Length: 166
Length: 229
Image (tube, rainbow over all chains, first blue to last red; front, side):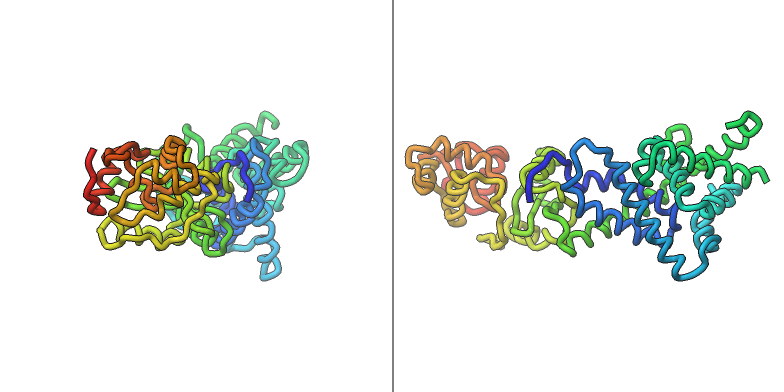
C-alpha cells in the first residue's frame, strides 16, 4: 500500500457507474450487463493504484468495460448464435416496455440494429451517443486511432440511417 | 455527411442520445427520463453488490461506512488490519477519504460489512454496556511519538483520567505535555482511543477536537467524577 494523489475509488464508482451501466446494457443487453459491470470495476480496482493521476478516468474505465463487453460477446458466440441473437437485440431495444418505448416505437428497432453492428462500430456508436465521449476518448476506449474511431462511428451511423429510413 | 441524409441523420442521433446520461436538453419525461431513472437505479444497485463483493474478496484496502451515535453519524474507516479512522459528523467526508487515499491507499470502497463488529462495539459503548473496545486498530495514520501518546491514553481505564503531563511522561517525554496535547488533538480514532480521558491538572477539561461538549458527554457516560470544567 503506498500513497498517491488518486481520489478514493468509491468516488470513481459513484461518478462512472451509470455511464458504464448504460454502455454495457447497450453493448451486451440487460442479462449480461451485471456480470460485465462487476468484472469491469473489479479489474479497474485492481489496476487503480497504477493509474496516472490526472488521467481521463471515464475513458479509462470504459476501455475496461469495452474489453469485458467483447469477452461477453465471445462467450455468447461460443454458446450460440453469432450475429442476430434475438435475446441481445430484445435487451437492447425493448427489454421492459415503458411510456418511453410507447412514445418512441422506432427506438426499439434502432437499438436492435445497433445490436447487429460489428463490435467496433457498435462500441463507437454507443460511446459517442450513450456515454457522450469525444472521438479522442472513443479511440482510447476501443484501442484504435482517432481516425479509425471516426470511421467506425461513421460507418455505424450510415447503417443505422438505412434502418431508420425504411 | 451528405445533405439529403441530414434529416435522417438527426433523427438517428436524437434517438441514440435518448440513452445519454448528461444531456440537459433531453431531460424530460417525453424523452426517455423513465429509462434513465431505471438505468440509474439499476446502476446504483449493481454498484452496491459490487462493493460488497470487492470487500468480501479482500480487493479493497480500506472500507468505510457511517455509524449512528449520540453525536450524529460518525464515519468509520478500516483497513484489513483494523479501524484506522473515526470522523465526527462535522468533518468533511471527501477530505477524510482523500487523506486516507493519500496516506494509505486509494483502493477505498463504501461497504458496511467489515465495519459491522466495530459498529456494534460502539453501540454497546454508547449504551453503557461496554467498558473496553476489543476491535483491532490500524495506527498507520499516527506518527511514532503520537503513537506512544495515544498508546498511553489507551491504557487509561474506563471512568479514569490522566493529566496531559502524566500522559506525556508515560510516552517518554515528561516535559512534552504540549506536544502530547497536540498528538491527542490529532487522534484519528477518537472515542475508541480514549483521548477524552486526558484532562488538565486539577480536572479542567482542556481541549477536544470533537468539541468540549462531547468530551464532557463521554466522561459523564463513563461516570467520571471529575467531568467538570
